[in-house]
Image (cartoon, rainbow, N blue to C red; front, top):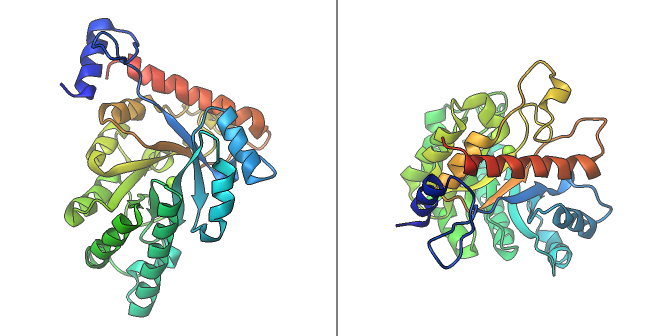
Length: 303
Ligand code: MG
């Protein structure tokens, strides 16, 4: 019996949370590994930000771009703490990797390889890659598919050598016409079939594009190695009603349950704004607590 089945069966039998020990009498709730993008966390230095994250029970720090010139600073800031580098949010580099111009493509590939080296050096889970944002490519989706099929195997090889991976990120249609749903990214991963080419999900974009958080995560389960957290209005989880009082609050329970069911082991990381009148020193730990509560609810409640 694998661990997932064991947990599910134990839950059915016990109907309660239990602790995973050496015996089969008890199981533990899977860990929710909370993380945040660096810019979201208050603090006068990276060290202060890491201290805040740790005090609030988070264990991941997501960095922007390619922080190759900050490796020593980052290592020093996390040294002796429970915080590790989660993902590097690298982006699209103006869509260069899927450009029609071979020179731009070549330079984009070199840049993402360099970011993968940094990701490996920092032991991060991967480099977030958006093939192109709206306005960055005049190609059709099937033309971009073909370019990716051509360039990704080599990038995947480099990622493996560097000890990292690419994380394809689907975005809502307001940001890209290309990858909008996790199953589309999963189709690329399946086609390339390389351990260095994986994907991620972002609850903000998923609220706009996916019919079901659970089905979306399950469609990409084999390659899923990062998750972004935000409310429906892209503020902190739990802040939807502060902006849109008449609309429902975005729930993470269904998606979290799916992450538990697929045995997701990586980080869930804040990528969001914050209600303008809120103090991040109070609002962020409150939001983390809401997420932990919903993670527990997902574990307790049946689908
Ligand atoms: Mg995102």
